[in-house]
Image (cartoon, rainbow, N blue to C red; front, side):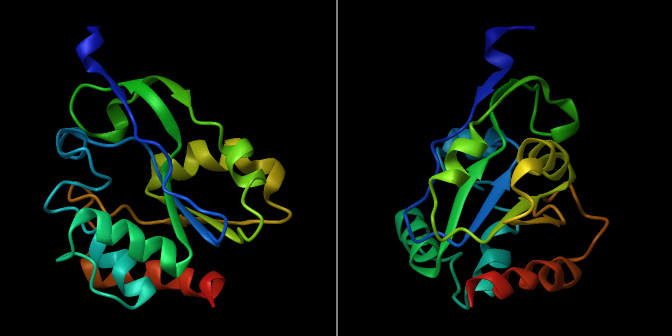
Length: 168
């Protein structure tokens, strides 16, 4: 495998007031090219999390989206710091190096829930954070990815709205 196929994620988007942390697996090619979390134009993340926080985030400039998330108590990161992955599908992730999720969550005093965007993030992240399940809700969500088309947007939206419980 070439070094070109080794993908590296972004730093966390957090502050000390984060109450819900949303973890993906690893940014896809469109996100890496845009240097933005959920940068693929058909990814439903910004519409889904916007419904959770009660604000239309999709039309905002990227920096304003991130600021709005933090203002609402939502942080972002990924389970994997880097991995070999040709293309953008989670099923293609190999040789993953994980982010220090325990270190991060232990440093967030107001954190109440960790939500996983998709099955791959949920599987790996739940394993990494199992020792914190006594004090944090670990919430598996349907993927916001356009590749996860088996579930319609409205059904995804209903599942994601459950995050409001930990933001109240």
